[in-house]
Image (cartoon, rainbow, N blue to C red):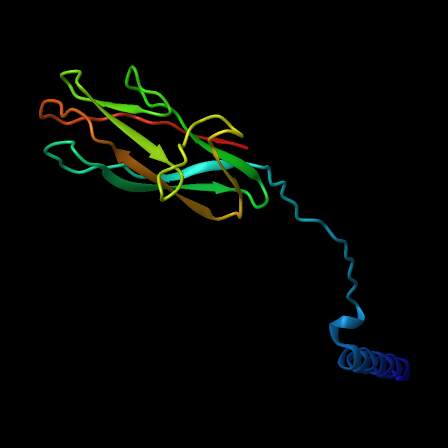
Length: 172
C-alpha cells in the first residue's frame, strides 16, 4: 500500500509539473513554424485600342454656299510610354481621297468634305505615318483626339442623307 501511495504521489507531482509547464509556455512551447516566399508577376505588353468613337455630324443644311464646320472626338487608350500614330483613311465612298473625302446618298450623289488635325483646319488628317498622321505617347489612360471637319462650298446636290465611313488606324 505504501508503494501505491508513493506511486500516486509521484503521478500527482508529474501531473502538476506538466500543468505548470503548460501554464508557463502555453501551446507555443510545442509549436513550430516554417516560412518561404513567392513572387507575384504580370507582363504588360505594348498595346493600343480605340476605345470611343463619335459621329462627325455636319447637321442639316440647305445650300452649300459657305463652309460647314463641325468637330467630333475619339479616344485612344495605349499602355504607358507606348508611342503611336493615329491615321484616318479616305473613307469608303468611291472617289474619296485623303484631301477630299466624299459622303454618298442612297441615290449615289456625293458631298465633298475634309478632315483636319488642327482647329484652323489647315493640316489635313491622313493615314501615312510620318506625313499626315497625328503622333502620341500612351499614358495608360484614354487620350481624346478631335477631328476638325469641314464641308466646303460646292454645288448643292439633291436633298437626301449623305454618309461615309472612315477608318481610324492606330500604329504603334
